[in-house]
Length: 390
Image (cartoon, rainbow, N blue to C red; front, side, top):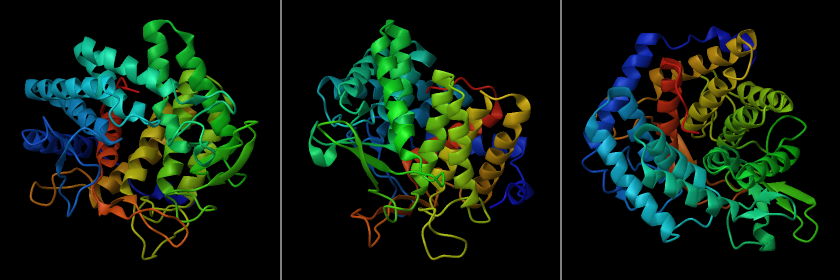
C-alpha cells in the first residue's frame, strides 16, 4: 500500500478519541468487580473474557488497562483495584510463578512500574526490580541476547524472539532506579543482536532467531506463530515497529530510526484497504484469513512513540498514519456495548495454525489483552502528551 493510499484514509477526530476512551473506561469499570482479584484470560471466547489466575505472560496488560482508565477518569476504585493486582504480581515474582521467559516487561511494566509512577507504590517498585533481575538472568553472554523461553542453554531454545524488544524498557527503568548499569547494558546488547539478525533484506522480520550455543554465531531464522518461516507474522512485525521506536528513545542511536522506517514501511505496504492486517502479512486484500487488530494497535503505538524522537516534519507522517489506523479500529473493530463483549477490540488473533507452523489455534477472531491495552494506549497518546509506562 503506497503512502498516498494511506493518506487517503481519514484520521480519527478528537471527539472520536474522547468517545473511544470514555467507552473503554466505562467497560473497564463495568467488569472491574469480576476482574479485580482475578485477571482476564489472554483472549476472549465468543467475545467474552473469562477470569483466570495471574499465571500467563499477558496478565500485566489487564492491569495496564486499569491504570490507563484511572489516568483518564480518576476513579479511586480503579486505583485500588490496580494496587490489589500489584500485590498479586509481587507474590508471583517472589514465588517465581510462571516467570521463566522473557516477558517480564509485558508483565511488570504496565502493572508495577505504572503503579510506582502513578501511585508511588513501593511494592510495585520492588516487584518490578525483582522482575528486571529475572529478565537479566535469561541473558546469554555467548551470542549476547536474552533467551526467549525454555531451559536455559538448551540448543533447541537457544534463540531470541522479536517480541522481546518492547520488554526492554523494564531494564532501562531498573538502571535509572538503582544506578546499576548492568540492566541497561544487557538491554543494549540484546537490541544490537536482535536488529543485526531479525530484519531481512526486504525489511520483513523473523519472529525468532537461533544462535550456535558454543560460538554465539547466528544460525537461522524461523517462525513459531507466523504462516511460514519466510513470511512476516503481523504481530511480530508490529513488535518490531514499537521495539525500534523504544530503542531510539533509550539509546539515541540514529541508525534505529532507519530500521524503524524500514520495518514500519513493510508493514504499511502489506496492509489491506482498511489498514488492519491479516494475521500474517503474507495475505492480501480479500483472502479468507483472520485479521489481527492487535497488530494494528501495537504498530500505531510504535508510530506515535517514534514521533517523540523526530523533528516535527519527520514525525508528521507517522502520527497521521497512526491516526488513520486508529480511525479504522474505532469504526470497524471496537466493541460498542456491554452485550457484545466485555473486551475493547474485536477481530484479533492470538495464535493461528497453518500447514507450516505448529501453533495451537487460540483466540482467533476474538479480543485479546494486549490488543485492548495497546488500543487504549494509542488513543491515550493521541489525546494528550502522555508519559509512557514503558
